[in-house]
Length: 565
Image (cartoon, rainbow, N blue to C red; front, side):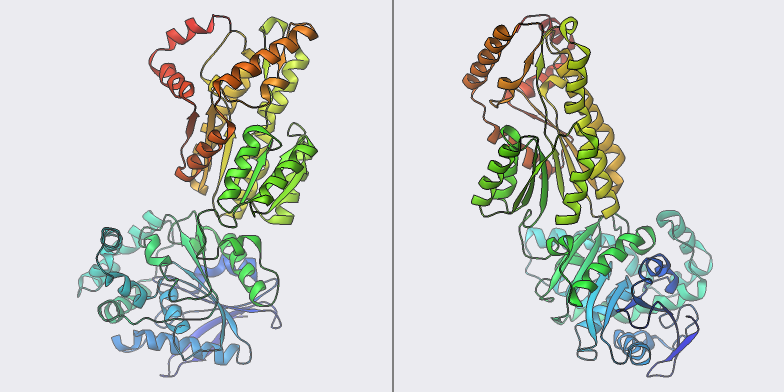
């Protein structure tokens, strides 16, 4: 439905566009500068099936009238316009606000004022902070952190000074320079010259007085802030440092640039849908719950760990649990997975056990769906499950190769493919951790099969890291050296009869025990690697030295590889 006219308090006509079922929850979308209502087209298409969506051209843009002077662009007037839209199109039902850029600035002003108290059920803000809140940030007691944040935001806001100058901004607009820069830099359509010229008054009317004399405006409306992590114009702090002014706050970081509604409309729509559904009385989606402000880095985050029934996998599950994360524990050994879950729950964290053979693609697909259906899309996936195999290449059978490739390589491929796709579609970043080995870059005559699979995991991780960077998904390859786990007791030693193989297993286990590098230390390094988003994390001194030697003295490593273990 289009062509609806809303008359403002000062007599202007606003063009509004309404989509969806009148009985559905109402979402009002307010655009920024220099856009019009069409910036929401992709979001409207994703929401209209189960929401009533109202998008209107703000004063001075699109088919709406422009005020005769600069005073007509005051934030109070913009809030009055929103009130007029609600009075005309949703007089008896509270609405869910969605706003971007200057629309978000105006909606913060409305949400934190008295004019629309009781009329707004929730608010989703994108790239448009409350100017009073930004002013209060600039007026905070000067500490090194505050000074750094203020300088960073001032550097990103350089254009606001330009737009408040006389004449020059209009020349930039009318010459087409501004539109050309936006189109080239942001990949957005060129604005109409009328809209771009009119919108300059927003900067001239509002910025200086609000920043100079800010007020601590507050709201009890549920708020979620969608933060584009690659926003060229606003820092993270400028958008998210509002916990003292919004008592029911959620912050969600989206790997995207400033024009998030255009570049990731499906992600914006999902975030809005989750908040609306919860405010309207439904359950809180896992991702929405994890976005609540005030928790620690890992509070309520979901971590999936394969091969978590023992060893490095179990230690990793416990390391994340100690930091407040929930853990999905996967292992082909159901009893081992259950013991890990008991240990996680003893720490006060949530955990579920899943019996899964990572080599089975169909089983992994069921596991990934089950995790998403029961707990939501995970934040971190640790592909840890693996087996050991040693012996001469000539003694390694096709069946041996098939099994170690299926577990050590295909198990990682399944985890990356299935959970990586979930993370990409979810659109809020995440992290994949692939546990390889120092054997990936330390060749040895008796580790042809094992080292081949671990080298493949290392290369796969490097390629995926490059591919998934734009989606905000980190990929880390963890390469432990000699770590005392159960892998030595279960590793295959090919070319030996059963008694000799058992002897080699016992000898290897004893040697690893004497080395005394526990899996708990690996787990701590793994968590830190995720927090720092490193590409390659060697663990143990020999893994670090081996990596250095592989780059500086590969000939020496080839010579050492010829020696017997």
